[in-house]
Length: 237
Picture (cartoon, rainbow, N blue to C red):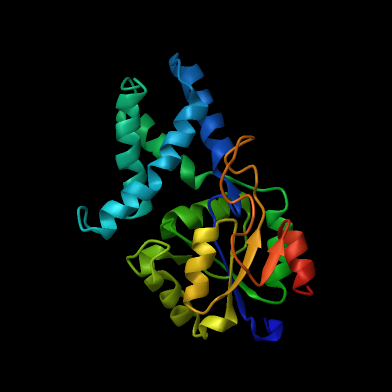
């Protein structure tokens, strides 16, 4: 890796920058208490996240037209409402619950780490989240991105190669001038295949205390960092 070539850092968001699991469990619990619902909100959160990849695959296969992530999350949620027996929720409550993904909290190291990194690099999310979701999340969580790179701009979902190609094109950079930062091996491998430099960041509690995936890098990435502060240290910021 030639670090002085790096001009931009593109960040996976869900699980890498923000903690989706805690917010879903917390807001689900608050809703359940208000509505008198008996729901295993941990199981609910995991089931919602588990529906993510199959929903994106339905778009890739042509079974569904292009839909942004808010729309896919709502399709998954509607199924979970039936599965978990919470069909007493009215439309406003369903819509608010669906938008919990706009209200996720950053990991403790994320905000300060990003501030350090943006002093030297362009920092941007490269996320399956849609533009409005990422913008609302950043506004609430005080995540100061230089720009927002959503898959909505390419109408492809990660890890499709078009996502990474479009990101480099929009930044007017060569792929090797962009470093993909993620806690997920599949994302980094896909970015690496398109010529991006790569940084694996440990998030071993993304799925809670019994996580079994992405506990270690599965191949050779340019940087392996324990958190965003360590990433900044290794990049000399």
